[in-house]
Length: 201
Ligand code: ADP
Ligand code: 5GP
Image 1 (cartoon, rainbow, N blue to C red):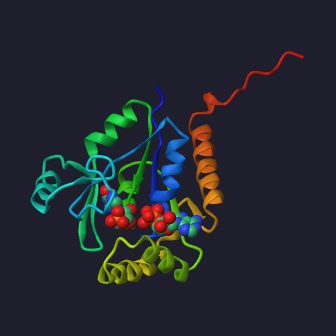
Image 2: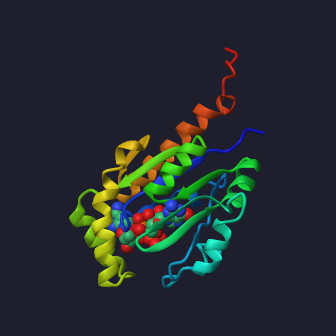
């Protein structure tokens, strides 16, 4: 069985990455979301085991320091720890699933060195629009919001390291663009899946 694609997606917080991903995931049964571990507090509506595995700092460090590490990659982002479970990703890839990693730019750097991912950076159309979306979501304190906006500028500087840049201006277009990237990469990596039978005329 062909091994699945590792799809790494990064974006400044509030850009719309989760919204786009949920729509693309709903339309692709072969695509699995790697549920990360985090030490941040759950937001309203977030479920443990679905959005994240919410853990304490002690639990996170114990997993991180296992030999080999329980995390394929990990990073401190906006003052919290986040990590991708090695076991979860390996099991999904081995089952032939394409796996989405919603991770920050530091995590993407680590995955690039250990694996052969498809990398996508999602950008907001402007910084002002990013701020509007973050405020509109209303999930962060004003302090957390300021940290996320300050980090957005640094994260944008890493966009050129990604294979694809996707500007989330109009939501439906961004969803179509991510779907097109997935379709292209699936065909490129698994050419046998493309219908190559010459029709009998
Ligand atoms: P992220 O996962 O990147 O932090 P979210 O998916 O939570 O961001 O989106 C942040 C906010 O922006 C949400 O309120 C969402 O509904 C809104 N949003 C997402 N994409 C768009 C878009 N293209 N146009 C306008 N608002 C959007
Ligand atoms: P949020 O707190 O808004 O859910 O996520 C904040 C940031 O952490 C986002 O940039 C998100 O991509 C990143 N993130 C989420 N999970 C992981 C992970 O497992 N590893 C890394 N490196 N970053 C993550």
